[in-house]
Image 1: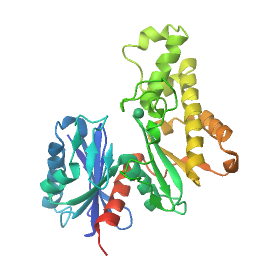
Image 2: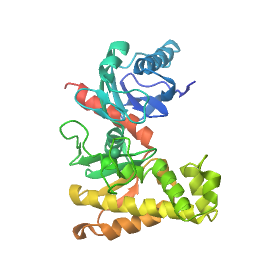
Image 3: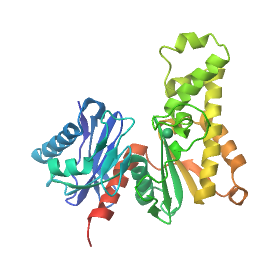
Image 4: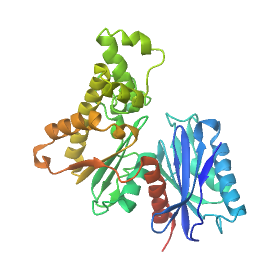
Length: 328
Ligand SMILES: [Zn+2]
């Protein structure tokens, strides 16, 4: 049910947790930003948030029992979908089974005895890049994760932009297509319905259907995932190729718009879809440069993030806990 990477951490460490729709990953982060003991649990197996929290506690206790850690962590930072500060609530997460406003932070501290702070998962990943990334001189950036959905965190002047309720930077829920695809947020045409792993699959099916391709009937009941569409494009499937081109062009436009209202030094990309290579990056870079507001032409870097998005979220959540919960 779970597996771990283990090494004995220093005494001074913070628990970083990333709750995703499929997996929850966590680790103990030391002062230098190195993740020591690592664990993961299948989020979708836990019908209640309390059950997931108890399982995380079980893992921590087993590490202590085995002598892999000397003491239990005192602090935790948690990245989760639709999570906001300062109330540490997860609010109707579209990709999790748990519904309503979940007082996750309160539950976590009650069950584990560990003080915690919550933020949106993409914000946590952005903080990981800010504090531990390979280009830490960059203090103004937009961080985008292209996974099942599209997450985004914005860092300006070395600080995460949170807005009044912690939901600032939700680029995935800006509308790119009027009367477009239905989104889990209840509106139509949101960017993440187009520029994400799920969005790519929808585009592929649409292109096949509209072109009258016979492949459509073969795949409609069991469509390939983003990786499968990537393989098909590389094997010469034109619809697969054009679905990447369409995704890249729309994303380039949206990212160019984000530059106009944030004035960043860089835009970082992470997440499974950003691993698609030239299929996505060629149309994306072209569209980004073409649509940039002229003061930013050829000045804003579009590049891969330093870490995998989940690893970055563990690091960033721990950094947030250190900032918010340690009184100096
Ligand atoms: Zn939406």
